[in-house]
Length: 373
Length: 168
Image (cartoon, rainbow over all chains, first blue to last red; front, side, top):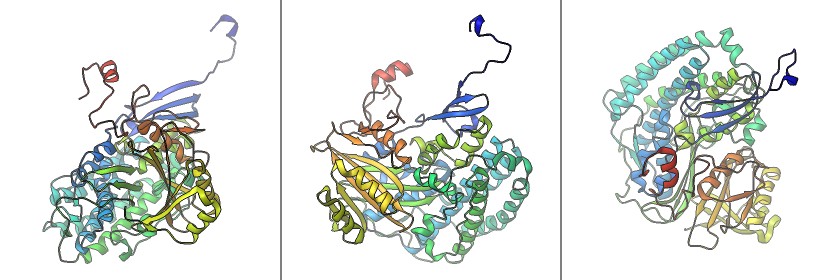
């Protein structure tokens, strides 16, 4: 700055700030380039790809069965959902349906995993906003879900719980008792979280009106999951295009109209309640019978292509598989909810404060393993 | 692939509105798709979005067929909330072709086209910010092209940026 430019008022200028990739509030390795005017965000660009492992390329180089464990490494917070989507897609391609027992058990695990995923989201995004207690509560309850997974298959995160055509293992003896106990306990805990946060003035101040993305914008950005339901669109693939027997269950799809971070929080809390409803009903009707359909050991789907999607905890998770009749998928595309949802950050963050960006990233609920694949 | 003809109201509308621009109308395992000429791809998607209520671009992706003249296949998966229905619109074109961007119709196409550009090297005309998204900006090559093997890397990049001899 030259002398002539020095005046008696404070000079301000635009600043470019790098946030991440090792910033704790980015939930992994997300880098944001923020263009700031003081505390206000004028523009934001997401820099992603730090965790890119070429999952789709790996898919083309593995057999259908070999690839199944890889999908767990995308959204590792909700590995069960990844596996469910993949199994359903391949099953559609080879025209096989899992037996009833396997379907109900799959659904049970998927809902338990939804709760675990939402719990991790709640704990970490509350921590981002300075509410440390919630993290400990959420981790404590999530541990119970992970224990059920561990007792079932030995793994806690990357479970690889399902196989193409059914389940990996028969249910362990204590599964029903454990899940019932968890459901009983968790109903009360959810109320405790709400006492802690829902009416907390600081919590409301930090989230209300922050990161608004209205229904039209949600559609244009192809946002899915709790985000679109917080914007007034009551759309959930479990109801809209039921799979794995969801149509046999009585549950509600919560919807709110604020389209902001606070409503996304309320939606996820309510979704956990609804998941418990599904779990309670499913426990009552696990049918006896086989856990695997007849699937040939050497899997060679006939040439063709399918797109199959499920409602993962973070939104619509889809698999587009092209088969050329060989042992390997010719093309295996994953439609990741986190990647698509994250794109809307470049819209939502404009005009917000830097501290709000943290809240917005939190309530999108991303997992970088899935964004980058 | 053992497809069936896609016959219903929407399929008929596509045919009558776009005539010869629609090359195929088929269905596989109950999932309908249509193939268009590359030049009318944008118009067909725009028609579906504005006139037929398919206002949600679920996914946009590509498939590489290196041994064919039109090596790239571009696939848009569209969803309609109104009809609770999903369809796929595809088109095929050669490597040198510049495909008109869908980002003017759907914001979601912005990142999805960047990913396709990054992975396949497909060029999108009119895209606001067509640059790599998952791979580093100065990486050479497009990983999802079939001529790239699983272990194929930009060794020069690896040596320069990571300071190691080889990435594999």
